[in-house]
Image (cartoon, rainbow, N blue to C red; front, top):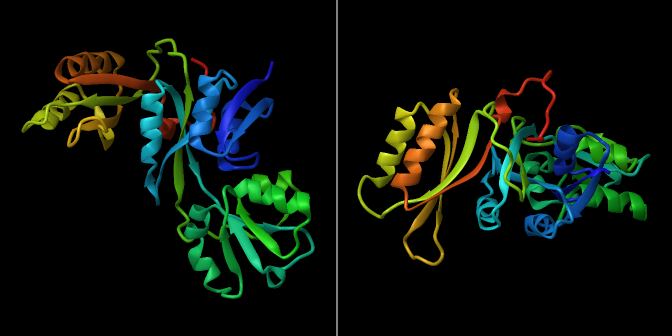
Length: 285
């Protein structure tokens, strides 16, 4: 039976590419037009795992997704960093001069803003998803309309790439995580963890936690605060740490559980930045 992967967006999107990188092409996609829908598909057992973007080097953190993973009691089982490439594509046998409108996700349009300054006659139209637009152009034979989408979308929907790499900033990377509802089996080969905790609102409480992480040789790679909705002026902290010694990580986690008002492990997994090209990427735990 094929593994069912819930993705935000459509076939041909960057989320689809991440799903293929992890699980290969023999998968069944559950296409979702929102991250809430991705989570719902997991909670309803209509998908096995989900792919969710968490942060981008240009746009920053996708903060609501941290809250979604936490409130839905999902577990992060792996991660991947994907370089984002934006390509302009349309039906075949057209040139840029034939294009009157470009449709794409608002973030893709924003990241390609400088390119389109050279073509003031082209109208930019916001849409729900990059790959969904490419598919619509193909299915409805829409001439004079182009999409900004990943190269895989052009291959899937038989479109022609009019311009490659039109993003303004070439070093544009997004961090994706693989999530599921069941707690994975503990794996001592992991070297990264995502944690959530709440603290007393008093001087030095956060500094004390950070000192524990430092003393246990944890490398803090990210810290993100979110307000606790039910308690005004109180915050939850979401942190990512990397480590070389699993026992040191367990020691740090046990101390934080005592010190924090609320402590939760959102996931332990392999650091996506350290994976080599020769390593077989697998999210099975």
